[in-house]
Image 1 (tube, rainbow, N blue to C red):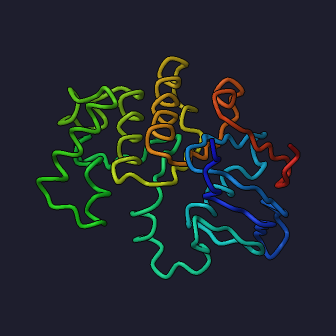
Image 2: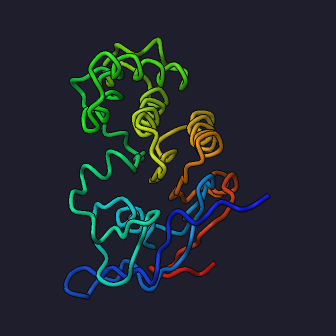
Length: 223
């Protein structure tokens, strides 16, 4: 069977802060394919979150290049719109809007891509049902458990069907059972939708689920 083409390509990615005094990444290169789950591992401060920020157009490299499909991310003219169409984010702390229900939080990304209101509502409830939290759809984030909030955060990340999902320590605030549930949902999305999931984690058990591992140390790839 032919391999899928590379979807995300990093070439000598370097990111310095404080006018070069702080080196977050240095010369990081790799390729990742659609349908893969790739774990980015390493100790705190090794550059995992910086790498995901560059891939998610939340930051720009000091040097080097990163492409998603045929798009050089340095040349994206409207980053917010591009992210809404192509990239989903799952964070360790869910970043739910506290005054919105879970369904409203999940529906929010669809506003940016022009989905009509009725379709947004229907799709949000479908995604929450898929994540096993449909009974909590009309609840505020503060009124549900941490595992339920994080599953809703996964639903929000996947609702627009992005080809790239960036998960930054998505299980770091959960117990082992809920953590496994969240990772299983991300893996299922990669397999069934041909998406790339790039997941930063310090947990070796979570990293073991991935197809491949990129290990960082002091901003450089060591394995």
